[in-house]
Length: 450
Image (cartoon, rainbow, N blue to C red; front, side, top):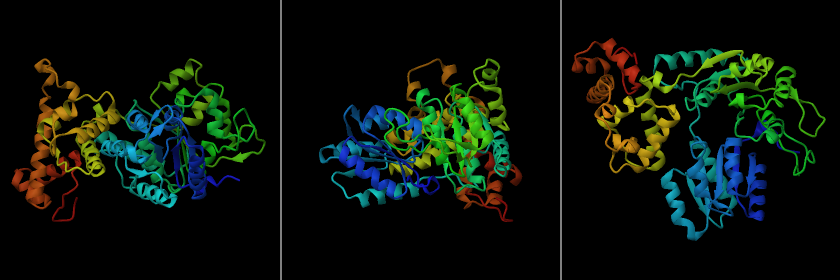
């Protein structure tokens, strides 16, 4: 009998081509309460990264059709904040060290003791940043309104439809919604509907019994069952095949499902949140998405604004990403210089928050000195271009200068807002507004206001 999904400690994607070692590690991890997806090739691992959204990646460096380094460099953005541990032979240590410098979390030299692996996984998961009830997605007015809506929506169990461009942070919003809900301690399970082949989608969502089809050598617990009493996120839901939409509709209406090849009706107890960057209403009008399913999903509709529409969040998010990279890479990075801040504020961010995080991570890894510069952030813009293309806007330049001046005043006054306002010759309320706008937190007031 498979472990109860409600007791899962997280999903481990295990990439190991050795049949004996892989089977032993998968068995032990399952005994310890982890859900395990074990694959043996680079191609299968790449598919599973998108399909399962693992909580931990444990990967052999040498694979029959490539290497663990190929997997990490190609798919690290899709891993989000999942810790990565590489298993390596003695002759591959240099490669493992290079991967640690590129952002991997740990490596183990073969042969190793299984308890050592388990301890390292536990430590990595303990360090993993999870959304907290007091977490915020930004400082802009638009994002504060979204946060307020998420906090209200968290208190009910209605379905939520998250809309927004690719990379704006729809999954981050969904995770915050879950963290704010009464079922926050239950699992959060994300399904990328565009990453799973249509012929495997039903099995991945609902699970299957042994012998349900060729290759089904054992029972498989699907996403709906793994979510238990928590939250099931259907990301890119507009890509759901038409053939599967009636079955998802029944899941939502009857609150029960059956594994593929099975007869037992299982209760569905999770809350469903759907997300898409497509015109899902247009698809419904065109007959590519069922109206009745859309009505079930679109009970509470929330839109995550693009990063270009919330410029007040750019520096705040960039500082957060840089702080995480500084700790992760064990580098003494002090921040962004004036040119970097101006470049951050001048860029239009077509890739939204995902692009911002990627550029900051690359800059943190490759910068020569302790200060991140504009050329570190935008190496693809280093070739000479017309002056009009390279100059930041006046508003961007002023905002960057204001932020640096406020940070310096707060530092000089030990965070005393009243004293800092006097040094800057501005009103205290004005300074408070700017502190909130720029997301500065190291401030205190003589009357206790923050």
